[in-house]
Amino acid sequence: MKYLTYTPPDDLASIVYRYWSLEGKVPDGQKYIHRTMANFCPELIFHYGGKFKEVTHENNIETTFITGIHGQTDKIRRFIATDQYGIFGVILQPYAIPLLFGISSLETRNQLIDLPSIFGTVGVTLTEQMLAVKDNFTRVQIINRFLKKRLQNYKRPEIINAAQLICKKSGLVDVKQIAMQVFLSQRQFERNFKELIGFSPKSFARLVRFKSLINNYNKGDKSLTQVAYDFGYYDQSHFIQEFKSFSGYKPNTYFSGGANEIFYAPSAK
Image (cartoon, rainbow, N blue to C red; front, side, top):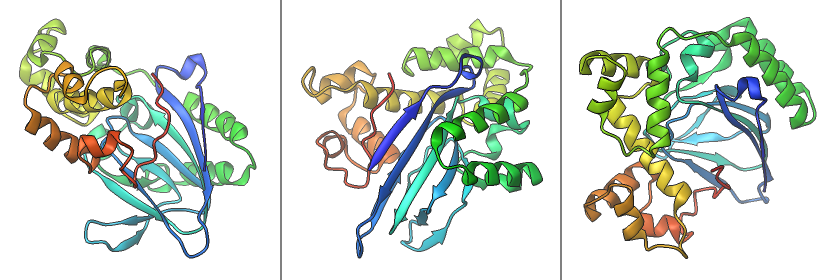
């Protein structure tokens, strides 16, 4: 398995978190199951070498898109590969969907949507371009040009600022206080935030906290209990329940390396 990350150019850093690629080959007669965890960032996905199929909660196998949007999600999904695969991904900032595609983030939350369904012929052309080239550095150049043409200003920058603050604080924020800081009523703040981010501020903060804990836990530093406490989980049972809800595994199983359906990709701090 080969995993690489690519840094977006400075003029796209406000909308793209990072690019990544994953390549591998499944031995004959075996299968590789990959579990995606809850993620507050939407992604563009391009299957350029083979593809995964989704394993539903009922353990049915369903065909997924070749290229599309994996929306920001608080759900777990499982995908299976039985042959060679190659994936190029674009991790977008939490507020990127309306800025790039002109639609509410509520429309992509917890969804897998193929590109032609969103862009029509533009999506078909982008799919053809991304799948036709032979290397991921060229794919980076293609997607850079595409995103620069799509990028537009958003009329509510205070919501972007609020989302950035929640991320900076690892989700440990007082939502009511943030609403006051951006001079909006609680109801206005909630409505505008959900339109841009896809989640309520409180739900978004929970997802940010979960991801921040994963990225910052070091087994040689503090105990998992202490780290959970540092991230505002004052009740151990609540911590275990929420972690399992967002990952599919109990925290001890995940951090001991026993989550065999999770790809432990290096985290960008």
